[in-house]
Length: 120
Image (cartoon, rainbow, N blue to C red; front, side, top):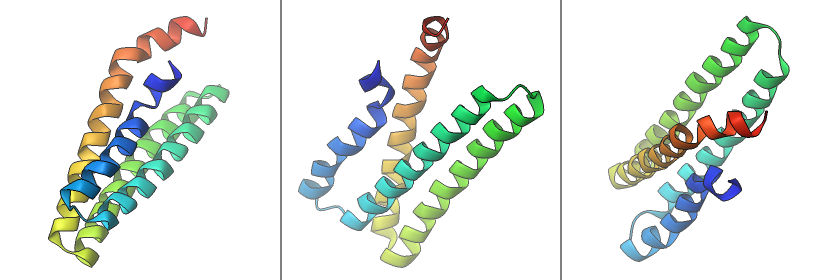
């Protein structure tokens, strides 16, 4: 399960040669790689804090705030990439971020029910 839970990071690593061989802007890959790793760290921190809390408001606040904040962080990273390095870099960054999100979301939707039963 450890590899499956990190499939988005595997996809990120696989996308590096695609960017290199495809002549895509490496700055876009670097910016999204950094933003993605940072948002994953924040997600992990928020999930740990949410598991530790007994208060429903704190739980919802952590998870919702984390979700919204991480989304804005990645979106602003894409925007900044496009504004600073050009539209090709911005588009490449956006497509990579959407692909990473799709992989993460799909894995989470498929395997989340199994995580709850394994922890009991």
